[in-house]
Length: 338
Length: 270
Image 1 (cartoon, chains in turn green, yellow):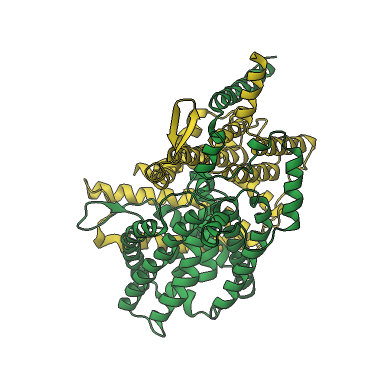
Image 2: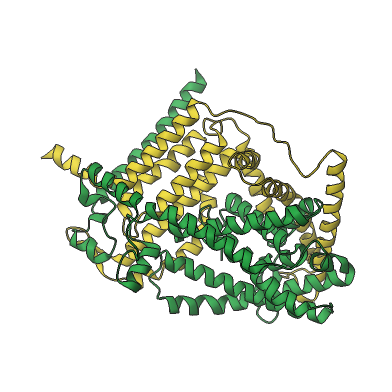
């Protein structure tokens, strides 16, 4: 479920980073205005709780297998959407750094897939709607399961879109979707059942924990329109900046645009792009080998397989890298002994 | 459960690595963060058939492992954990993209295999660079440089607090798991009847701990802010580190180095 760096292009990663940053700053603003500072340590400790509980295996009845929890929905229910989103982002950042679970460039994708859809889609549109005015154990259970399942469906769809837009899989869109969604329906159901079990337990033991995050005056109604606007503006801004970097290489988004519209860019090229490519043309000693080369297989055959003609050179490069590494090591050892 | 204890060990191991004093540990955290990001962006910007061009990028992790005195084996072990998802998505490519690409005279491979291998290489490169970053920098330094890069205070504090409490709560989760498995031998996981109470009990304890932590922090002067000591200033060595890698990444990205080497060697031997 965690997106990896290798599965995305800079433009997709950058756009989602912008979207995640936009949502995060919106949440931070909301928190700063409305939150008692008590919540910050609480958020940290609950984030750590989610992290730890992800490692506990739960037996899935009648299947013999076991699963674990993702925790996005649980965070939203316990902390509310803003604090829940930020805490999920912190958990995902630590996972990316310490467990190589999802990459650093893909962090934006993961925050959106697992934090945004649970906290800002499933929570206000499903959980809150079902809860309405009053709480009952049954309503809590149903709301937890439904919102977890739907949140994860959105998340899985996010993974599909991000991978397809990056052009990293040859799987046709429909095949990929029909592979991912049912799998995540099952995973979401387990996630939902565990979430429901925990939430109803807490509701019976300490109802104020559940109700505080929802009814407390600290959390006024969620302005979805505002969140979306911030996200979209952030995405457009960064997308624009990243695209001149990426546009000399028709991949990802542009590849998708190319396939659907038959032209590489819908609008004219930007000035930055023109300047960059003219610099690149001037500096390229061997223009045939430069990275402007289109990346369809047919083209690479036409160019005599340029993209992979350097097997021997590649081996040599690697050997050089290893030699350099050991040279540094030797130099260090010598320095230490003297 | 080995899963939890393994994770606790992993965090401590990386934490200890980041406390050492190696050439790479001494580089400014912000510089390392920026170089890592540019490395990852450069790596994933390679086209899906540009397998050869990716190889020079290995110079960065290899040099960093030497500079940071990191064991290849430990980095490799952590890297392998991250690859299954990449393989799972990439493995369809060889079957779907069968247009052959000529490697050298008489040898060809389908485009799908080439894009699969380039995906795999990208996975190895990006994951190893992230592990190298945390193994030589540590979370406090990363948090500090995030502040320098204008990341909001709330988020940085949240990140640090979450990190601090992860090992505490994982130990608690591990002892709950031990207690459970001693009473329910032969179970692969927690049975459904007690899903709620087991995790819920941990959560209640966590919640109370959160309140206690907050009160303890307030008594010690916490007012929603962490004072971070400005540890160091960027020096010429840091700038050199940054510039050298930026130039390298740019060169590797623009020129297909392996092909250039071959052309050069052909010229020499003719």
